[in-house]
Image (cartoon, rainbow, N blue to C red; front, side, top):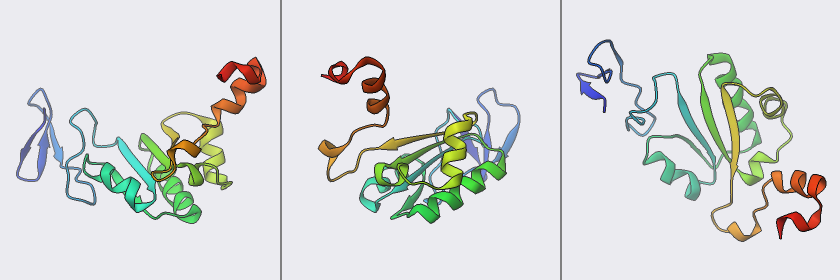
Length: 139
């Protein structure tokens, strides 16, 4: 586990130190990430606030414009990231979202079911599986 020393994080091996990458909530990210790795969660406040407790960068009550701005900043930064989008945002048609989904690589975008209606959640992969294997494949 990383050790905090005066606003700096010391690596597991005790060697190099670097500035502590605190998130907006003042929480240290997981000791299993590097300073350039990010966990970013966008969606309704009720859903994303819990992720903030584990050190994620959260964007409560985000809209499609916020998603596009965050994704553009991530792409420009060169950082690796896991981006979790609440399902209504994941189905948005923004150009940055489409570009990242089609390119793959260091930024992985996936979706979360809505907090207040998880029974209504149907991942996009279900459509692909049904198209390839038939409608009965998911029963």
